Image (cartoon, rainbow, N blue to C red; front, top):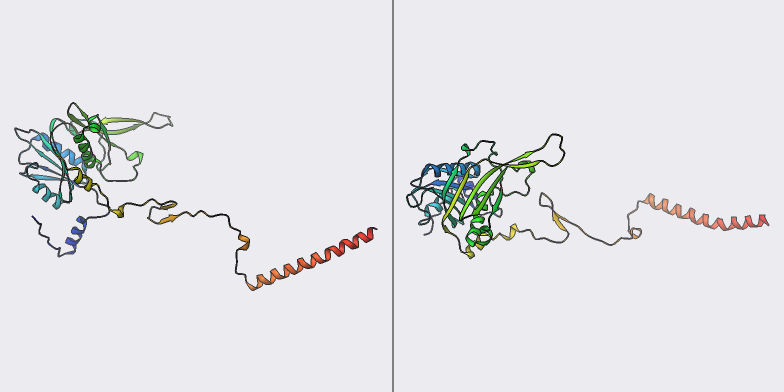
Length: 314
C-alpha cells in the first residue's frame, strides 16, 4: 500500500522533512521504547532503565500499544516514522510469554531484525548501591561466549545488540570518558546482560597507570531467547551498504586534514638552482657587471705583478 505524501506548508515542516531525508552521514540512531497492551512491573522497570541508559537518543512511550510485533509490524513502522527511530524495544506480559522483551531495528522504514527474550531475572539500578555513570556516556561492549561466534542466529543478535547499545559513533574516546561497560554473556541458552561503572583507582604516591575496577551498577537482566525474525542475507547485505560519497578512496601520498582539505606530498629529484632564471632589477645588473669587470682586471694584473716580483728576486 502506497503512503500518501503530504508536502510541508511551513518552514518548520520543511526542516522536519529534511531531517528525515536520507543523508550521506546519517544521524545518531534513536531508540523508541514502548509497552504492549498488558505489561508487568518487571517489564515496565526494565523499559524505564533501558531508557535511562540510552538517553538522550531514546524515546519512552508512556501509553500502552495493543500490537503484536511478530504478527503485524505496521504499528512499529508507523511509530518509527513518526519518531524518526530506527531501533525499538517492546515489552509485554502474558500467560504464555511472561515478562516478554523484544529488541529490534528497522531499515528504510521497514522491519529488519527482531529478537524476543523472556526476562528470567531482573535487578534494578535502585537495588544496587554505588555510583552510576552519567547519562549519554558511550559504553564499551564486551561479548563473551562461544555462541556469539559459532551460531548464526547469535551472530546476528550480537550485531543487533551492538547497534542497539553502542551509542553515537565517534572517532576517539578519552580515557576519562570511559565510564560505562556493558557485558553480554551467552551461556546455557541464556544471555546475561550486566552494566558496570568503571572505577580508576590510583595508590598514593604512585606514578604508574591507575588500577581499573568494574563495579556493578545495574540494571542486570537474565534473558532467555524465545523467537527471532531475522532479515535474509541479501536484505542484510543491502542494509550494510554505504554510499560512494561516504567512502574516501585512499590515494598514495594524499591525505586530508580535520577540515577536509586535501593535502598532497610530491617527491622530486634534487634541482640545480644555479640555472634557475630570476628577474633582476637594473641596479642589481649594474652591480653584477661592475663586479665582473673588477674581477677581470684583477686577473689581468696578477700575472704582471708575479713577473715583476720574479725579476726583482733575480
